Length: 261
Length: 303
Image 1 (tube, each protein chain N blue to C red):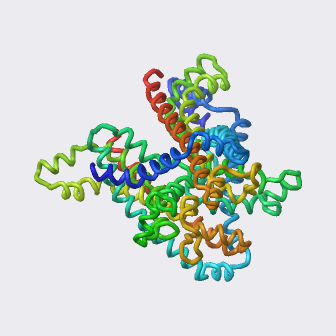
Image 2 (image 1 turned 90 degrees about the vertical axis):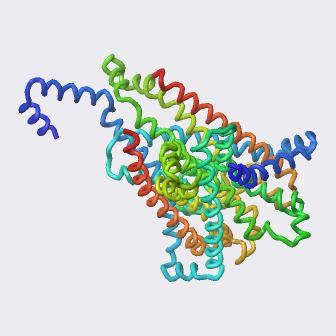
Image 3 (image 1 turned 120 degrees about the vertical axis):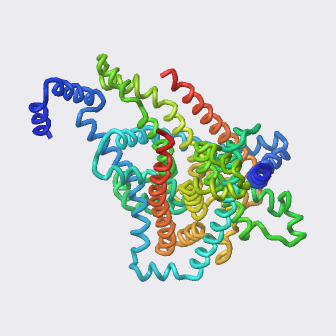
């Protein structure tokens, strides 16, 4: 017991406390000045905005993938099911160079897209693509078990009582999946906001345009501007705390709802 | 299919016929028209192919784009070998540390009741949701030249940052949750009865742990170690912040991929990347096998 707590505090609590202590050394005015500088604001906007957009795409595409994997039988289903975990397992730097080479102007997908006038690599769209890549397993793996366990009788009941298939999905299935869908969205968002390795290669990293907040932290560190790095880190950390908290509340809400169903 | 169905219906008794019809009707209530079905399956396959399969294929295509000899030459560069050695060393350290901690933490959380348990679980999960860059930053703030322990370390001539200890620490931080997370639900499910029986029959605490608890959770331990190791070898953001990028000394494999890529040495970069991708694929296959073992272990308890 004692061992657990002391090990935990050494490896997790002390470093995090150090971060917050460091940020307390800044006066509120300094803190505000760092955060409200144009470059910081733009980096935060790029990270949070694109992470939310990517998580939303993951929510929609993740639901479609879950539906196909759970409800239908098609050749290669088990392989595609296993493949969903690749973004979890593939080191982020590898994902980064692979996506960049795929979407670069001469890449397999970049070339046809460039012919259509769409530039992906080294633009904000590249960041968006990388964030979609790393977020997809979160939605699929949180929603999949819930859809698998869904009681078939409630669907049959809705159908035999005259509901159309669309009505059944909208009024019966979606509400049952809602907590899992929201959890998946939150997890994909949290991961995308903090993501570094798979994004920086494809991003282009142009300040104010395609520079993500984690990269700005690294840049400030290399300039020895520790105060700036700390302030940005604290903002991001608070957002991830809030997200985990929201996820935990969501899970409790979902558990409490089960008996009522 | 339709032949079989009509045959079966024709042969069966009226009740069976009615039942078969009802069954078919119920099935219809739970599925979509074929066109919708095909559209959903195609969308899922297309998305996974573009976003997951193609990036994986690109890694190997690029690595072998100049032939197998160039590939092997890239991997036998001293720099590449140094990076592989360092990655293995760091992974061994952090997996070892987190194995011990994960076992103790899961044991404490699953088998005892105490105040602050929920807080402890949240704390264990934390490294999952913190940006890897921030995980690296906290160690710079602690051990860097301007950090809280910076001057003390310098006086005693201890190098943590930009050296192996810093890389190992950051990796341990990032991979902290894996073993504990794999074991907590497993140990909670198994309860304390077997341990209590062993102790009441005169076994010591350690004997109970090695003879009763450990055999029960061995697949879970392997599962946690597997995921922990994969992440430890592949960690990029946190390690990048604390490593200092000293060539041949503090470059792990993911960091070397970045350096080579930025120097336009694509074959070399993707050769190293292909080893990491292979590690990821092996991890996924092993994970599937272990999950099957874990599910088998569950069944008698669930029913």
